Length: 114
Ligand SMILES: CC(C)(COP(=O)(O)OP(=O)(O)OC[C@H]1O[C@@H](n2cnc3c(N)ncnc32)[C@H](O)[C@@H]1OP(=O)(O)O)[C@@H](O)C(=O)NCCC(=O)NCCS
Image (cartoon, protein in one colour):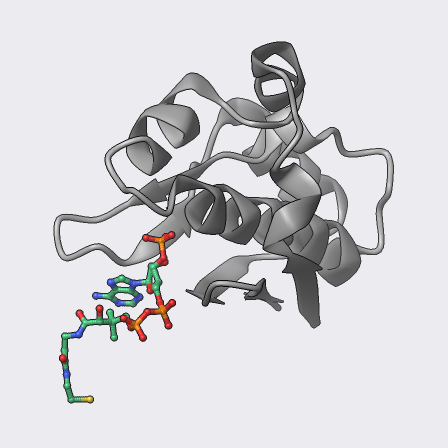
């Protein structure tokens, strides 16, 4: 199964710090803040969260439950927290891969589960 999401970067422009913290983990915010175009990165993580919900067809999952981390080479992955492992087990799914891309206006992400 597959989930995809695309979002405009500017929807995150006027968020307060508390607003970001409601959606993104500390590590996601720290990662994005290394970059001048930090909103592009955050928007990409948001797309992963939406795409994960679509792939599992389960809208009871909260944004904060899904955390995007990176390997040393920069490849993104979803943190396999106990919650994520339990939701995958509940749906009888394995998380295969995710991919993110962004430009000045949009970010997009794909999540693959089987
Ligand atoms: C990884 C790379 C391809 C990203 O492409 P890009 O057009 O610059 O940027 P995009 O917006 O499409 O993608 C950025 C996202 O790619 C993902 N990414 C980064 N490194 C990655 C890797 N090694 N594997 C998979 N995905 C990766 C990240 O999720 C990143 O977004 P994030 O940092 O917000 O999480 C590029 O930065 C890179 O490392 N290139 C080196 C290889 C290269 O130059 N080859 C040239 C021949 S094609």
